[in-house]
Image (tube, rainbow, N blue to C red):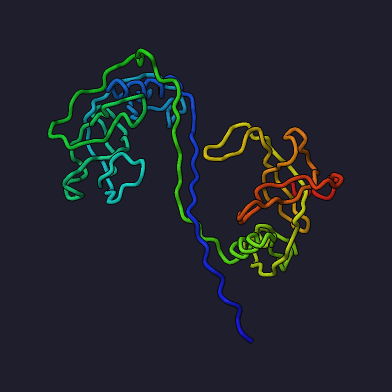
Length: 320
């Protein structure tokens, strides 16, 4: 008897990216607006400690703090780590050091990049540095282009500051991005291979006998390995859903649309998928749906109504 061929190892580059938008309170607004104006502000606690970057509540007492002070653009490296291969979006394109810098007049350290053309041998704890300002500033931490070595001594003490500037920054958009390569294990590779054949395969727990889709290689309830493959669906039932009103970047789907948890027939775990073929305001719990594949896609593009009567609540209530 010959053994089946070893499954192909699957891997794919994945990117998780979204813009994080937030409004600013008076302290953070003053700090970022100050950077735009080449002014570094901290905040003084009731104990007299100067915090840079500033926070709005004392980390020790939780008291609200608004006592802004200006500190110097020079400081001392308290610790560092060398970055030999900068990644996209980092402060410098050539190798640099990540440093914690205690600015003159501050009692805490600010994390940023240090431009060290001489390599890691030219960086040390205790070295003096100063801010190199970005030529174009908009009210963000990137207004500090980086730190650079500085030969001067420690400068002035913190000075009181009103925190008032013309045209203050009141909100920021911080892009978040994670690039990684995903390699599925045995169970998920079998699941993906089945999807390429337009079948949906899960695995059954030998202890509780629940069928999980997508499979994970182990039962999340019992903690035992799962190996028995079970084909489920392809039809299923909408258990819960949400209406998406914000258009995603690089996603050619018009809003509003519906994303739902779908309990496939024979599965004991709901998976998620987009609902199409029906107006968004007609999607409901209990709606019976089936997958729609398009082109050469390895997974369903969306799910559409089957035309069957809605499922009874008792048949899917444990999968909400």
